Amino acid sequence: MNLWEYAIDGLKKNTSQPVDSIRLFFSPGRVNVLGEHIDYNGGWVMPCAIDKGIYAAVQLNNESVIRIISQSHTEPCIIPLNKEIRATDFFGWQRYPAGVAFQINRIESVKQGFDAYLVSNLPEGSGLSSSASLEALIGKIILQTSAITTISDRQLAMLCKHAENDFVGVQCGIMDQYAVIFGKKNALLMLDCENIVHEWVPFDSSPYRLLVIDTQKPRTLAGSAYNERKMQCDKALEQLQRVRSIQNLCEAELTDLQHLDDYTLIKRARHVITENKRVLFARNSLLEGKFIHLGELMYQSHASLRNDYEVSCKELDAIVDFTRHHEAGLGARMTGAGFGGCAIALVHEKGLELYKEQLQKFYFYLIGSACLIYEVQPSKGVHEFLPA
Ligand code: ADP
Ligand code: MG
Image 1 (cartoon, rainbow, N blue to C red):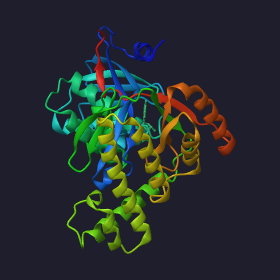
Image 2 (image 1 turned 90 degrees about the vertical axis):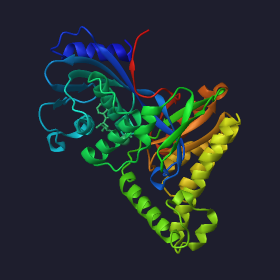
Image 3 (image 1 turned 180 degrees about the horizontal axis):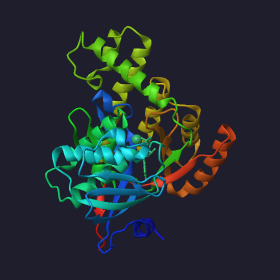
Image 4 (image 1 turned 45 degrees about the vertical axis):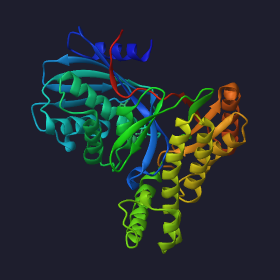
């Protein structure tokens, strides 16, 4: 059975409704190819939606209730539509769908109930943004089943972000939700996080393949370090604003660093300024078809995240160092907040199998546990699947 069939089967077993008109939806995860720790500094990021995500089979009901079952969680998520949706009535994963329903309901009243069964091949909590994938999925299902046409995709991305900020309590930026909604096949998204405008950059990586390598290391430090880095960037910006009229740190130049009074702040700002420039370089390289430059920019990004932003760890460094020394490797970097989670790599298809085998061995030898390797492709954002 493929994942659609699992989702349909799950729905049939768990709904009391006659399953006469099942609708299918897919929402992808995302990876950020370049531009790390940039979204909250108002610069450019370069993510893409991937071909792993959450599959949903949906059947309308006449009960004014949204009833969602996820294969990976025992508790269902039940959202009554005839009373106020409050965060305190929901726990764990239920807060993501409830938060999205709450946000949409503030703008257009949601009346149409449905039963949904979710099946996912996206690891949860590994940095591939399964949270944004779930939010966008539920958002899209609500808009389509309630025939709400007044909420644009851009607005949906903002509503999903607010759902995660307010209902779940995670102060994420807009990048993840934007990427899983606006993803396009064979393209990277170039997103300006200050003005929330985007363009797509063609990404024909052949003969190289894009790999996601999950360190399987829990990102325990990521939350506190994230907040600390954010505060340091705010402080650097504040000091620079005394001498320069800039709105965000990505507008600063390397020559401005002389105005910072602390070496840690200099390093943090240097990462932000150079990383933002790397995204702009990468876009030009890809538009000119000079794909090979992207690999070098990925290595540079990793070095900057490791040395200046200090958010890497030995597991991520091991993967990047291995790729740099492997003849099939074109580029690699950590992706996501850091301290664990995933790395990405571009690897020549000819040496791919050997690369995977040797990386597994190398990683196990060095770290003492296994890493997981997935091949991914830039893919279409959240959508209703309409069989041809
Ligand atoms: P990431 O977004 O990097 O995967 P997060 O910690 O932000 O990690 O989000 C993971 C959480 O999202 C899970 O703990 C769960 O609550 C929710 N989630 C993701 N995918 C699913 C799914 N298929 N079914 C139910 N909940 C999910
Ligand atoms: Mg998340």
